Length: 356
Image (cartoon, rainbow, N blue to C red; front, side, top):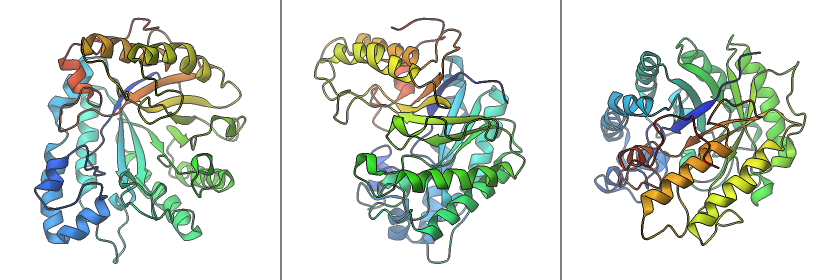
């Protein structure tokens, strides 16, 4: 068993998996409609132009300076979304090669700064959620057996390519699968069987780091699942947002702060009959942000979430921390940009506090 980490992390989204809302200029200047995933982006441009455009984007969207700023403000981990096409492109697919070179460059930077990295399979063959963040919007064809088998192979090959870099501390098997819990087609039996196939494939590479599995939007599925001694260092990824409807989406800004402390934290701490939890995505977004004193509110909301998710103080809880989405967005919107929160003085310099 590895020592349990305390994740104080951010996501590097919009980089190796495109999302038009994060980098709209990249789409607008290339005549690509918003909401189109990387498949559609590359298909629109063609391989030659897509290669040129994406290499320029990969080279500039994440910088050493960004990482240094994050590190100096207490961040110790990065979650890096990648698509399956970073290691496996079939002849009929429009994706282009080269992302691995930039990922490996980042892993070197992270190692030099003492930052750990979780490599997150954000886009799987066939699309696991039908959204652009899976690489291809549209039908959810990932549950087809051939796509699941290909995903298992992708995870093995991906792990093999990154495990030699000391910064790599973990691999996430699949981001946000659209399960029956939220009206999607992916059953939990299918999802669990996939995880149990992926685990030995990744471990067969010799990788002993942390392995993450998405909860599929249902906390009640995972008691005793993939537990020691047969499975080791497994973390269950929970995504908690306050701006997409549901009980967390409250009209009063400070009611969202209270909800984090009084509901989210205790809920996560109650999940003791399962493996450790980590909040792989959260943000400062709410549906009705305050119109005055925004930074004061954002600091309270951010600090509450860091605390509730186990990132502050000396943590011995089953909730091991969280990852803000995102490190930056082109618009500079503080609700989604951790670097903007830092610049506004609304993010902590260290994590020795109790935000609840």
